[in-house]
Image (cartoon, rainbow, N blue to C red; front, side, top):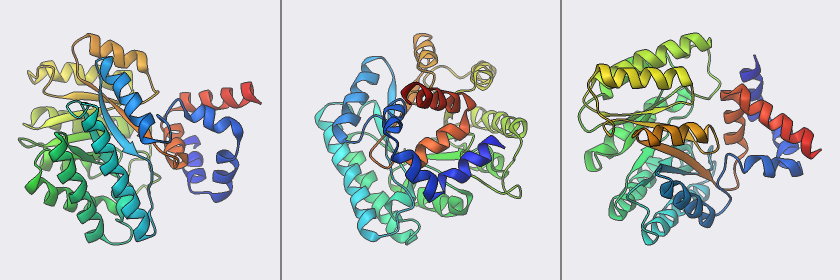
Length: 306
């Protein structure tokens, strides 16, 4: 119930104005967002890499409704790539791109072309891109665009969401040699007809999908902060005789940093998902929906700052 309420608030203009205009909100969001500028993104990336972590950078923005916005978002990624390259960070930092930010809701071919421009620039810079998955209405279009991109850029990553009923089958299709797949639980409000609603069902789907990816010949990327799922991934790595470096864990910036360091110390590959930019509201609301602990943190901050 709490998760559904928060996800509904993510679409509420009134709630958006209330939270984004609250002075305390920006201080709270710093825990989860690197900052508003490309300078902030590069600074945080360097800090994380120096700590032995890898990075996936997301320029915040989605639901683009004008072509000019899509062009601006694409240009932001190109600028980020140029800055990362000059800083010598592209060896361990990649990009995460939401297709809705670069025009998917306007025109699929526009989004595909903008994604190709970003992938070409990433390839020249010596890194790669993972295409984020969004709500279920965009799943087929996202898979189609990723399939086309992989013909020219085989290392382009794909995200699959365990709460969707289709995901185990999608994992079987994409668990192939050279395929990079990020498995997450999912953080959009979806109907029961397409998504599991109960947390236990989502967790079971995650484990089934994890098994498929570990058994395959691709490169799985397990995006989770759940201690039990992290432990299961480690057990399955031994079961399927996978050594560290043939898979990785992914976690959000600002969430369980101690666990990130622990896994790294044990020789595991850990990549931190780092968002930056001004359009942080929808991102923050999904983070709150994912973990009750995040809600408690936010409320405590409001009280302490109030």
